[in-house]
Image (cartoon, rainbow, N blue to C red; front, side, top):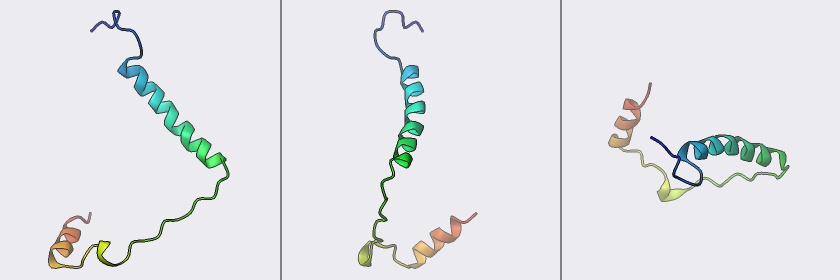
Amino acid sequence: MSTSGKDGASRRDFLKLAGTAAPAAVAAAALSGAQAEAAELPTGETRLQDTAHTRAYLESARF
């Protein structure tokens, strides 16, 4: 595979940049000093209902 004819960044260059940009973004967010707010938990109908199916799934998913 030769990329001598292509101009621009390759996938490998993109992955290198993405690998260094993500930790830098986390560090910048941590050092910004902004206070984070917790989201409210959903109430009512949006939570998982307690049924035999959900109990069986949760039992099978345990390690």
